[in-house]
Length: 345
Image (cartoon, rainbow, N blue to C red; front, side, top):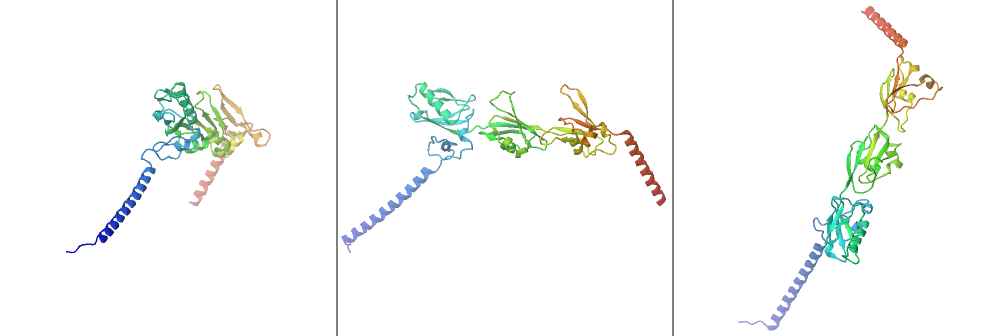
């Protein structure tokens, strides 16, 4: 029976030990890399809406989502959920939803009103409450937003799609009009805005002289809760002996005179009695006014054309003599046509 040398056995043992140590080292590296990746990966549903944007506390290594535009000026509203972190007392940390009154309730601190406050203002109010309630001698608080409760802006009137549109912060008037599909062809040059902070009978009127091209008017700030009414343009009616009777929208500047209105209607017909052109207008007290236009003098440059009001009616009567002559001429033409037809036949 052959025996193995002790030196050979010891050499094999050393080799086996080196292989095992190498395998353990490689396994340790893989385990460390896996642990690092697991620690940096965001947990599902754990992202904080504005933690990074507000410069505050973000718990659990959760990933931060992109904060909406205007987050610095965003004001809290009922229904929003905030994440509160108190450095001196971690037991007070947590997520709190604003109730219908805009308050949150924290342990030992009771109700704290946060509605209409920005994040820095909310931090100051909570800190002051914790100190005044003698919970802490000094409080350092950060507040972030977990869930946004967008408020609506009501857009009515001459827009393509009137309705309620949710916004988080202040937006430009042109943005809200674009969201509602833009202005209709009947949109006038007045936009009435009611601010949520003002009584219902207090409004402001924005004069728009160029549609969406009027940057000065379109750059007005609209806040959550405000309402917008795009008023209808004034319409005047041109009736009687004109080429195209009907209603016509007043110009962009809101002004239209009688000569321009008749021109929009294609001018007068041959039977028109232009010297008797009248304006029918409803007065403030409901009475009907009959206003002479001096149309003949206007066309000769001898008089200033009368400015029209919305809902005015410009009536161009038909001359009886001219109508009779036109009818006679039509009958003569018809008779001549009949004679020619008879001869040819």
